[in-house]
Length: 124
Image 1 (tube, helix red, strand yellow):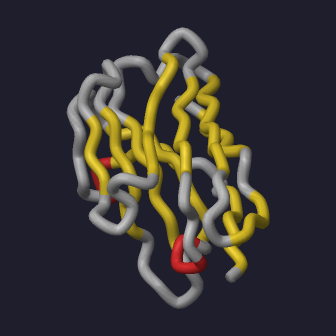
Image 2 (cartoon, helix red, strand yellow):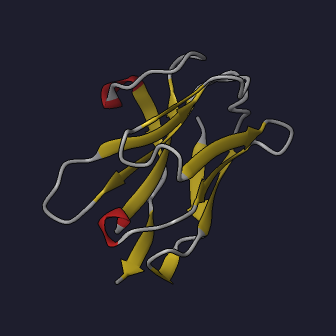
């Protein structure tokens, strides 16, 4: 079993940046794809950025492409989400999750483990 703990959320003005971290514990996540997802009030949870087990393949939602960067450090068992040029529409709870395989998957149901989430609020 793996536990995921997100950190780095907060309040930022539009145009600002934040870096989210997701630390895995309990066992290594280095063989699993990882993802960042978000859920705004009244909306469904959606994927933001995904990364395969090696970190060599990534996939982004159109809404964040060019502004967000996902990366991972398998030696530290940690996944990151660098968020630049933030917009008020980026306001949400951000979750990291571990997939049940090493390749990228976009289906939420293929992610077996989830963190508790970290709030990101972007003011206009």
